[in-house]
Every structure is written in C-alpha cells, then in structure tokens.
Image (tube, rainbow, N blue to C red; front, side, top):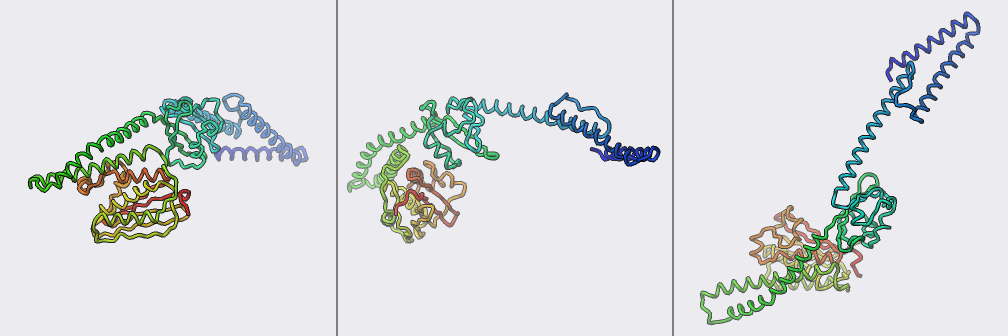
Length: 428
C-alpha cells in the first residue's frame, strides 16, 4: 500500500471531523456530531472488512470488489496475491505431474516414505517388484515387506550400503534396495532389478572355481615332471635355466589356482562355516613364525598382543586373512624394514592390524586394493610373485565374519592394514 493512499485516508478523516465540528458549532453539541461521524466511518470500515472476509472465504468472483479509497487498493492487492498463488500452484502441479511421469518411466521401483516409514507415493514398477499397490498408501512399508533383513536394515538406518533381497512377488527376481533420506523426515526407497547381473556373477564365480579345479590336476603332473627334471644330475647345462624358470612359473600358477579355489569357496556362502572361539594371540604368533620362516630378514617382525579376547569364526579362514596381510607386508617392505603385528580391542570391537615401513600406496589406488588381480605397480608386483588375489581373500574372509578392512598409507612411509571385528564377534 502506497504512502499517498494512507495520507489521503488521513486527510479525508480529518476533513470529515472538521465538517462535524463546524456543523456542531452551527447547530450545537459538536461532540455528538464528531461521535456520529466517527461511528459512521467505523461502520463503513467494518462493512468492507465483512465484504473482504466473505470474498476470501467464499471465493465470490474472480475480480476484486469495487470500492473507493484505500479499500479498493486492498482488494486489488489481495487479488494480485491470489493470482500469484494460483499461478504458483499451477506450476507446482505441472512439476509434480512431470516428476510422477519421469519416475513412472524409470525401470526401478520408487517408493516415497515419511518419517514414520509410511508410504506416501509409489510408481507402477513398485507393484511389479515389491507388490505395493495404490491402496497401500498410508501403510507402513515394513508391514508389506516382511523380509527380516529388510526390517533390520530399516531399523538400523545404515543406508550407506545397499541391501540385496528377493522380490516378494517373484522369488526369481533379485533386487538391490537403497533408501535415500531427504527433506524433513522423508525417504526415497529405490529397488533395482539385478537378476541378470547376479546370474552373470554366479556364472563367473562358477567358471573361476571349475576352471581352477580342472587345472589343478594337470598342473600337478607338470610340476612333478619339472621337479624330476630339475633334480636330474645328467641334464644338459643349457636346460638348467629354462627348467628352473618353468619350476618357478608352475609354482606361481599353482599358487594362483589355490587362491582362486579359496575365493570360490569363500564366495559360496555369506557367513563363516565354523563359529567357534579362535585364539587370536596364538594365531598372531603362528603368522609371525611363518613370516620369519619364509626367508631371512634383517628387520624385525614385532608382535603387540594387547587383548585376551578371541574371535568367533573359522580359524583356517582367519589365518588365511592374517597371513595374506603379513605376507604382503613382507613382500613390499625392504629386507631391513620393520613389520608390526598388533591385536587389541575397545568398546567398538577388536582390531588386528599389520603395519609396514614399505614404499606406501598412492591414495588413488586405495579404493581398488581388494579387487581381484588389481595391482598398484603391475610389473613390479608380478616380479615379486604375487597373484593379485590376497587382499580379495582378506575382504571376503572379513565379510564372512561381519568385519571390515581399513587401509591407511603414505608414500615413502609405509602402510597400515586394520581388520575391525564388531564387539558381537568377540569372546572374552
């Protein structure tokens, strides 16, 4: 509202009061004349307040009421605001329709949940993958998806990792569930069909396991003959170096096949086959002993055992994981480098760490360390005889024991590999 309009209102009111005073002086009793003028002015304003309230409540007409003075401007301003709101609602409805069309066209199931995990919206794919229909709006998602893993996933709110489960509509469909929090208490549930990827992954694992198993027998025969040829004192001198190289390469192939078979066995199930207390202190001593027996070292292999706790799990699998970490430390450290094996625990669980003083690992390579056959320095790593599967084995062993691997490294100063076991896995 402009200042000139309010100024005009004040001028008119003062003029009306002035006329009332003049009339009172002429006809007598000026107070009553002033009171009458003010009462009429108040009644006029109350009438327009009533008209404005009725217009806003009953939405009578689309144009503002006609009135003189400031009330005409008030009606016009309300009409302008109403038009802006109407245009804004149209834009929001149009955006909402476009959003629903786009999400309906997605191949993934999408479900919007509120702070109470109640369904507020879902696309058509959600009915095909999750069995959630339009009539389920307002229902809690955990009453429709009763998978225990999903209910636990929803309860813990650990949404940084996706959840894999079978479709409740068709058990042949394998889904990956992700929940993305947004807004104020809102959550977006996405379910992606990964049946084809899971099938291809299974084929790959089966192929690796079967091929490794089939290669082990002929390789054993070849290694046996090579050992006999190497031990033959009458072989020509020109054969000695080629036979020695073939023995080294056959041993490397045998190690590779054994690692592939170990991986295949670990991937066959998601949890450890045994669930018995494993003496970590004794296992750490055994790993250190094997590291010293593997070859002469000028540097020390230190042992720091700061906990009496044991781990519930499979001893052979845990030994394989710990040995691979120590073996890597020995392999990539200088002969005079120091290796530290440490076991300790706190309120968050148990920690088995292996620290070396080697060349370190570039930061860009850390996320890919546990991939199969990944090598930071391909040529140098092959020369050291590694298979590229050690850390992949470590990752799978830890996953089967509900544990995780944390890696920190600095170029030129060495690396630290830490296995973190949850408190629920420890046994005093």
